[in-house]
Amino acid sequence: MKEERKYTKTIVQFQSKYQPTQIWEYLTHPKYTVEFTKDPCYHNQVSASFTLEKGNQWIEIHTGEDCEGDVVQCKIIESTTYKCFRTVRHQAGIKNTTIIKLEENKEGTIITETQKFSLSARKIRPINIMSWIMLGTGLLTKFSFKPEDDSYWFEHMEQKIGDVLS
Image (cartoon, rainbow, N blue to C red; front, side, top):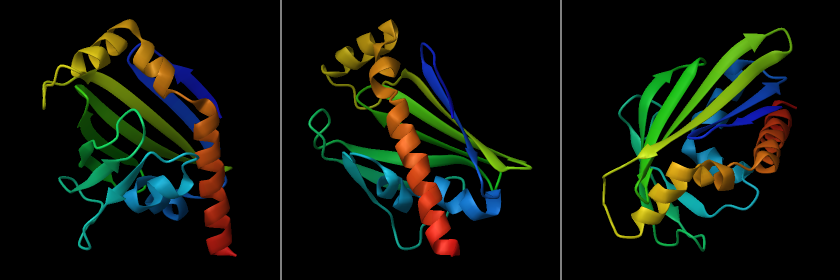
């Protein structure tokens, strides 16, 4: 696993032993996000008719100490099956764009996940100033980037796929 934290973005690369067709839904469908998370602080509400297509959305209901009660709308802004998946969400004055790219290789698939953070003027509240300060000083990526949690997530995804395929 390769990890990199920059000022306003984080990049994680993981070598999966599975092909893009085998991992796509696990990486992109919101019903799996919390399933592989070490200490989930939210759950997703996904409509029965939800599909992984551009323009579709779901809701995150946050229950963690730092963000309890936040209701965050997540929207798909790109979905190129087995290649690239991009979403955007706005929370606490921060716009978070997630980009997942898959590249097939002889070992399986290289998964690259990039998280980009920028200022958001949606639902401005006084508390957002703290988020903006954290973003401006680089503390947001420092505190949100937990390589051990990423490793845990990918390892449990791989385990689930192995269980399903056996």
